[in-house]
Structure formats: C-alpha cells, structure tokens
Length: 355
Image (cartoon, rainbow, N blue to C red):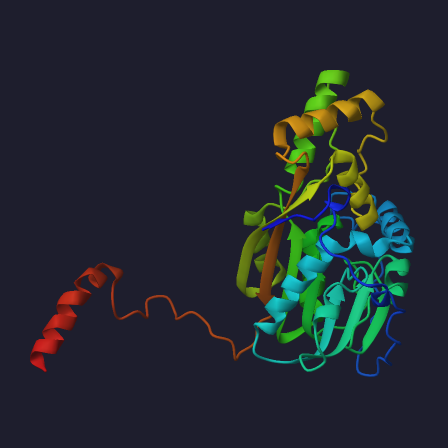
C-alpha cells in the first residue's frame, strides 16, 4: 500500500480529521461484571520487566514518551498510521460472524481500534495503556468504554473475563512478549479470540540503513537507533506457546512518503514511537545527522524529492481452546492415502461409467 499526500509540506500526513473529532473520552461505564485481580506477589511494578525477560526497553521512558505525545495540541496529525492499522484490525473483528459482549484493548493508545467498532458488535470495551494522558485524550467512540491504567505484561483482570482481546502497535515495546501473550490468553474466555498487530522486522529499514552508513563513515562505528522488532516466523511459535490455537499470521506493508528524514523522525516522536532501548545512543552529531539525511535521499528518494518510509505490519489471530472448536482428526484415522490422490481422476471416471 502506498500513501501520498497532496502538497510537499504535508506529504507526511495520511489523513486529516476535522476539529470535532477531538472530544473528551466517553464517560466511564461501571464495571459490574468484570473481575479485577491483584497482581501476584513478585510481579514487577509498572515500567519494569519480569525476572525471566530480557530487559531491552526502558518502559518508564516509553510511558513518558507516550504521555508527551498525547499531550501535544496537534496530536491528531500524528495519528495517521495507528488510525489505519486500527481500522484494519476492526475489519478483522467484523470478519468474525459473532458479537462480543465484553472486549479488551491492550495498549490502546487513544482508542484507535474502538472508534472503528460499533455497539452491535461489541457490547462494552475496556481499554488499557501505560500512558494516562493517552487514556484521558481518547478519541470519540460509540461503544461504552472503561479506561484502565495498566501495563501490557501485567493485566489486572481475572481469568476467563473477555470474549475478545485486541492490540494494535503496542506489544513490540514490551520486554517479555511471551508473558504478555500468556496474560492475554489468561483473561480470554474459552472460545475467545485475540486479534493483534505489531511492527515487523523490515519496519523503517530505510532509516536504519541510512543512520548506520552515516554513523559508520563519520564516527567509525554505529549503535542501534531503531528498536528491534519480532520476526514473523517467531509469532506463530509464541502464540502457540501461550496456549492459542487455530492461528493465523499475515503480513502487510504501508509506505508513507515524507519531505525528508527529519520530518519522518518528527512524526515518530509525535506518535510516541521514539527509541527507548536501554543501550541506545543518547545523541548523534549534527554532521552525522545531515549525512544520514543525504544518504537516505540518495539511496531511497523518490523522483518528486520525497523519501519513503516502510512500515511492515504483522497481524495475528489466535483462539482460546473450547470443546466446540474444530479439531484435527486423530493420527492414523485417514481412509485415503495422499499417494492415491493422483488416481482420483481414474476413480471418478470409473464411477461415471458405472452410472
């Protein structure tokens, strides 16, 4: 998918929404039928990692970045990517021929999924995020909504609570993705479904390569300036390990054109998607940044002077087991061998002759 804006100064924006879209969040709905649980002893506090995980990201810094982005007066103009992916997740929800009385959005941001759903499909929507400002400045939606300040790795809900769990462009920042998926599986009801989206490994490869080349040439080495992402072949394994079955994983790419590298980096900051890895390099020299921008334009630039940025998105769907779900037949129960499939035309022609 390739998206372009009309004017060079606004090439980085995909969509503009009228001012009336910026309204206060929906009033909180009493959570009478939802059980909250206390986090077990030994579970880390907000912003820290569980003992078994690799502590790659500074979760407290990520919370501050998201809070800062949600406080900006022009925050809507940075929502274009999350709006697009949120609508695609909503489409996948509509593809399932059932309604969901109780749903949960993990890492909801400002409610990029809920605004595309209707109350005929979802009865009540719980939204969780680590950034309180994102919850306070949620987008308008017609579904009754409850906002809960919570970490993706430590969901404060009881087992078998939700019929549907969704997550859009949030789980790539957790330190313990297996634990986060286990938490999602835990709070789902049997026969409940999880639909999520995360950034893929080729996301921002143009920016990554340009920074590496410029920093190597100017400073004799480079450090990672784009956060690591999950590989697509790992997602199915992680979902299965968390207990999900009937898995679906697919990939898509969204390419956005920007006036230059600095406009891209400004938008990433406005999205709350700046790097928060512990081992990131705090500053880059001015001449290195200018060199990276020149490399970016030279290697990847478009004929009109803009530069593309690729966002690879992995979509995943997993179901929690229930006896009513279809299951594969027992091993050895087949009555026809795959080796005999080549003879199917002969068998069919003999059957027609006998008739």
